Length: 164
Image 1 (cartoon, rainbow, N blue to C red):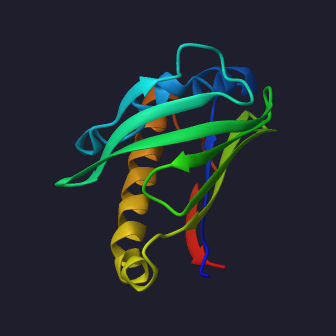
Image 2: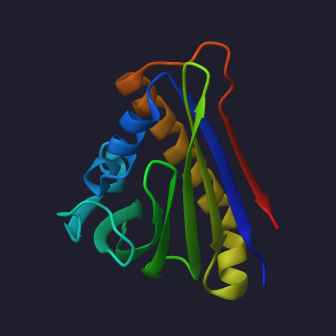
C-alpha cells in the first residue's frame, strides 16, 4: 500500500485569529479552489466548524469527471488546528491536517495531507497526473491567499509531495 503525503506551508502577514476566521469557514474553500474545478458546497457548511461536521461538495477535478466528495471534520482545536477526513469521494484515503502557528509579524499556515489512491495499479499510473493537479491547486491557493492577505517578507513558502 503506497501512501502519498503533501506538505505545504505559507506565511501570511495576518493575526492567527484572522487566519482562523477565514480558514475554518468551509464556505471560503471555494475562494481558494481554482474555478476550473467546479467546486460547489452542497450541504453542511452552514455552521461554525465543529468535530463531527459532515460537509458535502461537488467537484470536477479533471475535465469530464465530476464527483461528490463528503468530508468529516474530525478534530478541532480553535485557533490552532483542524482535521478533515474524506468519508466518500475520489480517494481511498484523504486525511488533511490544517495547522496555524504564530510567527513574528504573522502566521504560518501549514497543511499535511495523507493520500492513498484508489484502483491499485491504475491509481498508481494516474499518480503523476494527480500530483500535478494537487500542485496546481496549492499554487492557486497560495496566490489567492496572497491576494487576500498580502505576502510575508523574508518567509519562504513551501510545497512538497512525497511517497511515504
